[in-house]
Length: 164
Ligand SMILES: Cc1cc2nc3c(=O)[nH]c(=O)nc-3n(C[C@H](O)[C@H](O)[C@H](O)COP(=O)(O)O)c2cc1C
Image (cartoon, rainbow, N blue to C red; front, top):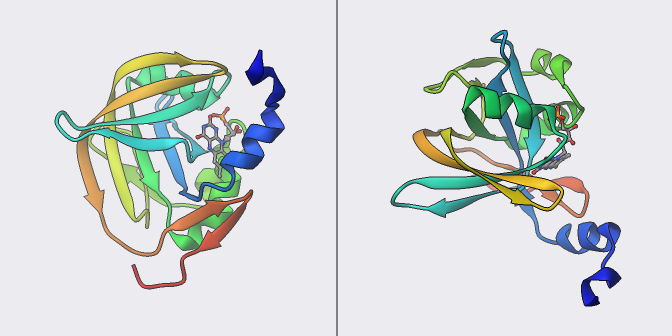
């Protein structure tokens, strides 16, 4: 098959040219503790109804908690959040919460202090996507404080270096 020629490394390298913002997607575990992971496979989907989608590796611990919680918050990170992004990219990143302050949003999912925007979602639909799962979230609350975003490009963090 033609697609067999494309390795995971090829795809990761090519998609790395697509600069993105960086988010931490948060929820709460069954005991009520905050959970979250760094994610850039996030995009808007529909304005009416208000839907976004996020793609999680199937083995993600955060995905399991989000399924159980039935909701999640997408926290769009600010340019000064690179260390937090790295910390939240660790599996089961409990220590990452020491790097950020947080408060609860509409769905009880933690909102990261200083995030430039937050989208609070309830899980509307779950779809298979190869080794990932696509979560469609219905946006039930938004907050947009503004500020310069953290950018991810070709495997490293970058800044836009302009007033947002
Ligand atoms: C910039 C960046 C973006 C990432 N985007 C995603 C993503 O969109 N989806 C995903 O499943 N993992 C993504 N990851 C990897 C997860 O953060 C990482 O696998 C983490 O260990 C998962 O933790 P968990 O198992 O506790 O959920 C990203 C990592 C980085 C550094």
